[in-house]
Image 1 (cartoon, one colour):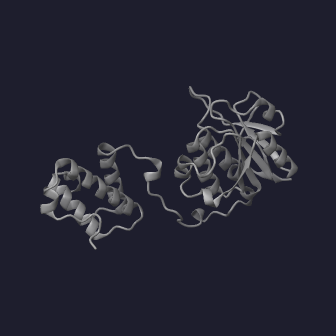
Image 2 (cartoon, one colour; image 1 turned 180 degrees about the vertical axis):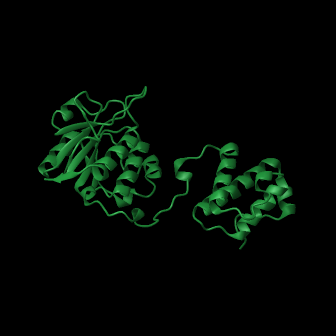
Image 3 (tube, rainbow, N blue to C red; image 1 turned 90 degrees about the vertical axis):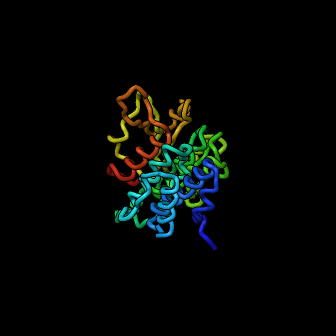
Length: 264
């Protein structure tokens, strides 16, 4: 069976210009993906060169000696300019590429749960799943209207991590906080409140729970009142806060890796 990227010259030149353009886009996607995975075949590289020459695309007319990284970036550059905008789920990533740079695993992560208080965005929720899996966080508690696994946008952004992170559903955030307190957890709320302490100056206690609030509404004041600590990420730009998925990553890494911790 011929590979998907195989074309004979006569057949290729018999295609109309749009069909040729789409065929070249398809083969460049294969080139970028295989180059990222360090799994390039000489046949694929040769086919890209031939098609580029047939279409007079000079950037790919001679690929001899190019490294996989250079090929991936060249393909990406051409696709950015000539293809639809890339989506997060289109980007090839390693599923497992070793034990986290040889660093010693932080057991504190396994003593941490994250409470998502009525998040609105499935994309943000999926991003939080991915970060939580990378860190080895114990569980995500999904409260109120927070999107649940099974939603297409969440699954795309989570990039196959939903099955690798424990998660629970709570009708409301107060129930989740009550459960966390019953488990002896210290409760931290990530919120841009006037009484908040910077995430970089706290000494964190474990086990704990970190609450993340709705993108527009934040964390309800009634919930803030029953938390042990309110923390925030300092900013000095026009916006007063980061995207919730980004903020979670900054805060969680600081809690687990950046500061000394105390076990209850």
